[in-house]
Amino acid sequence: MKGTFLTFLLLITFLCARGQETTDSLDLKKPENPRLNEFLITGIVEFNWPQLDYAERFNPHPGIGLGFYWKSKNDIYLGADFTAYFADNIKETGVISNLLTSAGYVIGGNGQAAEITISQRGYNLNFLKVGKLLLHSGLINGNIHSGIVGMIGFGLLQHKIRIVDQSGNVPGLTKDYLKGYDKLSNGFSLSPSIGYAYYDRKKYVNFLLSVEYRMAWTKNRRDWNHIDMEKDETLRMDNSWIFRLSWYFPIRKKRSKDYYYF
Image (cartoon, one colour):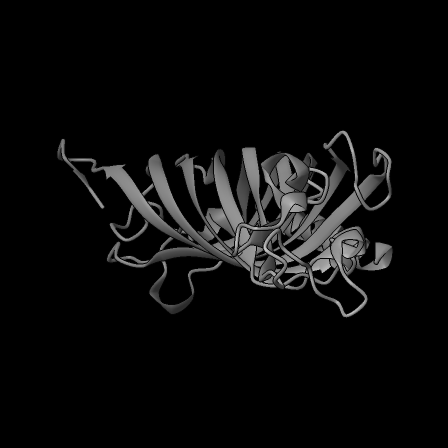
């Protein structure tokens, strides 16, 4: 895993070195190559492939989110984004093992087997994300802002195990007791990424398709764990490979007119 991540960083470094070589050869005076500052409202769809401690608890899962970026006329990105994670099943077992009977059921207060659902909930908030167009490449009619983009995000990852008693009859799964089972964890996240940004010359199609390796140092924030019968003080490495599509809705001020458009 370390070797893969180092290769990832070396690729970004190489593209940074190459990024300035192609700029001078572009005709910036052409209408299809405008140099404009713009604000990007961003819709995010992504797929997470958990690694290390994160992989022991959760299966691969999707995420959806929203971001806001400012992009300078020199293709520097600055902004923030939020992505929510959810999945109907988790990998970790024994989450409520102390409540199970020998037959594997949870018995409610009415003496009947209760219906329990266990799933994943979480989010990553990049409170600061910076990036740069590293290598111009206007494939398929893209303008001067199209090409290889490197970014890095600084944020907070949070996740928990969501446990729902559908019957509402299990005394051990009331609101206060649930905190001892859900393993709510959060901590600092660092997310370098590399991808291809496409900006249509006709301004209708604008997106970034990227690969990200997020590293997150998290801890269980609950005061008590009912399974281990103690507070969990373990430092976790909740890393993940992320494949992301960011769809941009640019707001730009045109050179000759004073109105905005999407």
